[in-house]
Image 1 (tube, protein in one colour):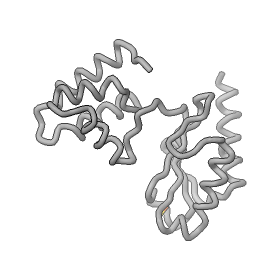
Image 2 (cartoon, protein in one colour; image 1 turned 90 degrees about the vertical axis):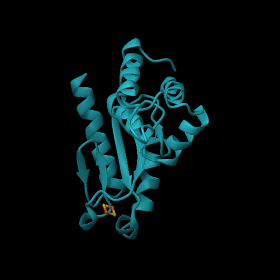
Image 3 (cartoon, protein in one colour; image 1 turned 135 degrees about the vertical axis):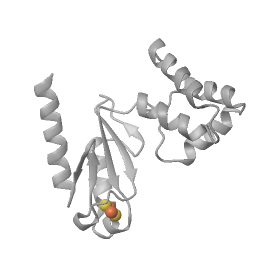
Amino acid sequence: MSISNEDRQQIVAIIEQHQTLPGAMLPILHAIQDKLSYIPEDAISKIATALNLSRAEVHGVISFYHHFRTSKPGVHTIEVCRAESCQAMGSRELEQQAKQKLGIDYHQTTKDQRYSLEPVYCLGNCACSPAIRIGDDIHGEVDGEKFSTIIDSLSTYSLELS
Ligand code: FES
C-alpha cells in the first residue's frame, strides 16, 4: 500500500534526524511508528539505504520486536496480556474469546479497520488479572463476557460519533 507524500516526508525527516546516532535503527523505527502508528514498506527501503543495510536486515529487526507493526492499525488497538499472572487467571481463554469476538488473530485488523488485536506482556495490573489495554485505558478482571461488553460499548460510542 502506498503512503501519502506527507508521510513520506515525515519518514525522510525522521531518518535524517537519527541516522548518525549510534545504533540508529531502533530510534528510527520507534520514531516512525510513534508518528505513523506503523512502519510502512516504503520506510524500510529508505532506512536500509540510509544505514547502508539490506532490506532483509531491517525486516529482521522489525520482526524480532513484537512492538513494531508493518500494517496500519485499526481505530482501537486492543492488547491482551499474556504474562504469567494473567495466564494463571485465564488470559488464554480470554484471548480465544477475543479472537472469536473480533474474528481476527493477533497482529491483525478487522476488515472495517476498527480493531487491531495485539499480545502484550504485563500491563502492571497483575492484581486485577486478566488484563487488557485499549488505547490508554487498562481494564482488569476481564472475561469473555466483559470483553464483549467493552467492545460493544466502543462500537456504540463510535456510531454515536459518526
Ligand atoms: S501479568 Fe498481566 S498485567 Fe501483569
